[in-house]
Each structure stands twice: as structure tokens, then as C-alpha cells.
Length: 569
Image 1 (cartoon, rainbow, N blue to C red):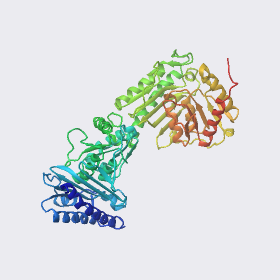
Image 2 (image 1 turned 120 degrees about the vertical axis):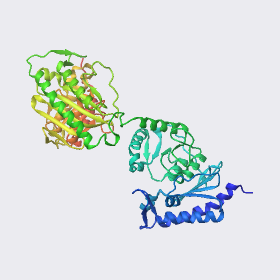
Image 3 (image 1 turned 30 degrees about the vertical axis):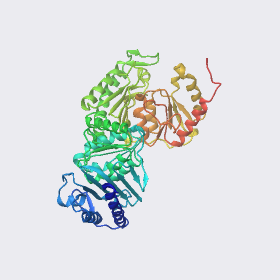
């Protein structure tokens, strides 16, 4: 004897198949009748109405005492808070993913759920565009095209494919909340995906194609059938912030494992506590906007120019008081410290969300701070301090800004030579307000190479530096050592140097210069080659006007490092 659920399943199964045939007929038509229900993004077609009327008519003809909650009927009656009773209630989305349906994107489904005693006991989801029919009966497992399906066993976000409805950003009063959440989940997940079809995403979690899915602000018809499929496939479906999952207010995180679901919940909680991507006060939606970046740039440029007067005061003194930091060649002056203090004070007062990585602030520290997503100013108050002390004009103030670990702004100012280099990401590089362009040299034989042979004063680097100096110098048109990474990179940006190589430095030595080179059309690679990502916090680099030249320099460095007979006592 058939149970009640088996009987209801046998009744609805062929209707779901027929509803899919109606959907597919409309899906394959190029032209569809489209209307706007409420907001500009909330669309409905004649096929939504056809399918819902078909299902409702057949259900009520067979079971006249059953209740019915359908998306389109609810929209027509302006009643989206219909009470769920203990009576058998069919919860139907005739076409979930209507915008996909219109554009023939194959994430589009007929979704049918059945609630008895306020519990979802039956779910059928038909995606005819992908030829997939998902079914679930309470306590009997989940199936796709008659074959059992099971959720993934992924337990960590970093290993997970997570779906998140990015389309929620078009709802104005939800946008700021969701951009923060998208940022935090997307930063940690292996991949973040968005298909704009809630029930299809739930089905993909049930089948193990996705590891997790998060959604809020939806309606019962979006989630009724899919939530049962996930549970019957061995997954978890819970309210994002505690309490039981409520199908009539279906905010949810679903995942293959509770460990993964909980990690996503914690990321959402973290996002909601923050006002910016990095935890500061900058609004998420505008933290890296053109207007905000210009504000950072204008304040920073004004401060750097003011620091130029401090720089010149010391540069023009016949004799400076000089202090030694960690090594006999590592000098600092009172002017280094005054400039860094002026920059940090000015920037932090205007932008209190700022973090700082400054040479003098970190003097004596054995470990660099971690570069976070927060707006972070990387400061070398005087790059080339030895030049500065000896009044050699290759020295300057270097200031860079990172946001989300990306270089966004760079300024190098050398008052001794009246050179002000500036760059903003995507805006090009400039010298004293005029655009500059890196060299077009492609061969080492035609190139003037910058190379820091001065680093031979460090015993553990001496042999490597000398072998590289030999290999580069013997192949290049000329070699220069300016003893200032910031100025050398600035000169690559303006085409004075064709290429520049340095290892073993700190982020403040190169950060601004790296952005200048890139914005001037040049390239910056890890010394080990393009298979190794350049890391501004461990800045071993080859910079050049062209990739061909950079690759030639990298190859010569590799050859130099293989030399065995250049060993010095």
C-alpha cells in the first residue's frame, strides 16, 4: 500500500515533467513576453504564468482541500506573508531564474515543494535546459534523474566552491551589507560563484557540485524544494545567525558539512562588524573608487611636498649628525625620522583607517608586519640615505599606498634634482606632472642596466651580487649603480634606465617605484621568473620597460647563480 507521500510524489512527478516541457518551449524561443513586477530586476514572462496555472489547476483538481503558495499568484495578490498552516501546502516557483530564462542561460528550473504540518516532505526540481530532474522525499534520500546524489565532504572554506547571490547588490538597501559579505567569503573561498537561480544552486549543493551556498531575503518558493534536497543528500541547512531554518523566511547557509557551514557563518559575522574591506572607516562601496583614491593622492602629495622642505634642510647642511642602525653601512639621520613622523601624523589624522609600514618606525624590528587588506602606507622617508649624507643627488622620499594588498598609489620626490614622480593605479605615471613612458629596449646588448652592486658590503650576499654584476655587466650596453632602489625604479619608469635588478631589500625601498614602472608601461617580475609571483613584502625583482628585456635579465641571473668558481675568501 502506498504511503501518502508516495502517492503525492507519483501524482506530481509527471506534472513536473510536463511543466519542464512548457518551460523548455519558452526557453528556446528568441522572443518572449516580458513584464516588470516591481523593481526593474523583478521580471515575469507569460511562461511563468502558464506553468503556475498549469500546476495549480491540476493540483487543486485532484486535491481541492490542499493549499497553494505560488510566486506569481502571490505577486498578483500582493501577499508575500501568506501563513503556512498544517494543511498540505504546495509551494511553487514556476520558473526560478526568470532572467536566465529570458537570456537562455541554462540555470532555470521549475521548483515544487510540498509542506505537511509545516514540514517540507517532498521536493521536485526540473531543469529541462540541463536535462536534470531532482527529486527528494522526506527520509528517503535525494536523486538526480533517478540516481542517488550526495553532498560534498568539504570542511574548509579555502577548499570550497561557494555560491553567493551577487545579484542581491542591485537591491539598494542591501548592497552595503552584501558587498562586505561577498568580500569576506570571496577572499577565503577557493572560488565564489553566482548563478542567479536559488533552487538550482541548492540542487548543486545537494549533488556535490557546489560545497556551500548562502542566501538571504528570499521567498519560500525559492527554497522549499531545494532545502529538502540538500538535507536528504546529507547536507545541512540552517539560519545564518542561529535559530531554526524557517521556510517562510528562508535566510540560509547550506553546506555539505557543518564545519564548512560554521566557517562561512563566522565570516559573515566578521563582515557585519566591519565598515570596510580592511576593518577601517572607509565605506566598502567606495574604498577603491576613483574619487576616494584621488582623495588619498591629493593629501599624500601635499604632505610629501611639505616634507621636501625638511629633506632640503638636511641635504644642504655641510655636515649632518648621522647614526648607525644595524650595520656599519646602514645610516639614519634626524631628517629621516622627521619626515616619516610628519607623513604618519598627517595621513593618520586625515585617514584614521590607515595602517603604516615605515622604515624608521620598524627600525630594529626583526619581523615585518603582515600586509593586510586595510589601506596601508609604505614609507621610506629618505631612500638612499648614504647618498643624502654625501649630497649625491640620487635620493628621495618614497610613499606608496596599498588597498586589498594591491599597490594603488606611488610618489617619489627628489628635491635635490627637482624630480617629483607620481602614479595612481590605472592613471599612468608622471614626472613633474608630465606623462612618462618606460623604455622599449628588448635586448640586453642595447640596455643600460641598474644593478645594486653596493649590496656586496653584506658578506652573505657578496658572492651572489658579484656574480650577477659580472654576468649583467658583461652583456649590457652599460651598468649603473645609484644606491637607491626608489630612484632606480623611477628612472626605469621614465626610460632613463632600461632595466633594474635588486634583491634582499624591504617593501619601503621599492613599493612606490614598482607602481611607477607598471603605470609607465613597464613590467616588474620576481627575480626567479614569472612562475613566481612578485611580492612587495619580499621584493626580489627585475623591472624593465619590456617583458622581453626582463626575461633576458632573469635568464642571465639564473646563469650567474650557476657559476661555481667565483668564490671569494
